[in-house]
Length: 185
Image 1 (cartoon, helix red, strand yellow):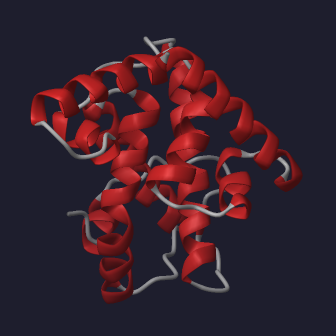
Image 2: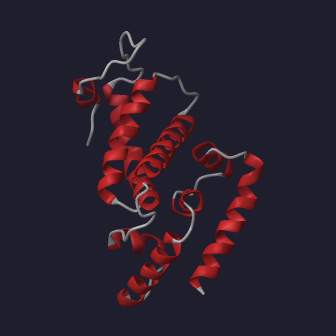
């Protein structure tokens, strides 16, 4: 687990105009926030990037940038939305830079969290089918579906995290579900 003191020990690469980096959260507040959000954020990043190792790296970078931003937030939900927005932007930038395969197999635990119960072998098969189908979707569609159905995010939260207009979320989710359903048939 990353703590505020770990972040403070990270050597900053100063950029033009950076005088000093200050953090708005104390260590206890950050620790509670991290404990509440890290697991879901890691699952989201793993699903969006398709690479658990890359997702781990992006998770740490997300929290670092979140703390470095020194923004003030109205409440816990606003803070969480900002965190997912940073993570989405990092994943998108990494994808653009590296042009890696858009989807790779994830761990069985991730697959079974989406595939519903039943026979473990059948559940694993459904998970693999879902994994292959999601791999054929665009990264934005995968991100929106994950946020909506795995994270339970509201349309407002999805719009903020993915960077689309609030009024577009319903239509974009409908299209992503329809594409996914077509791929699963």
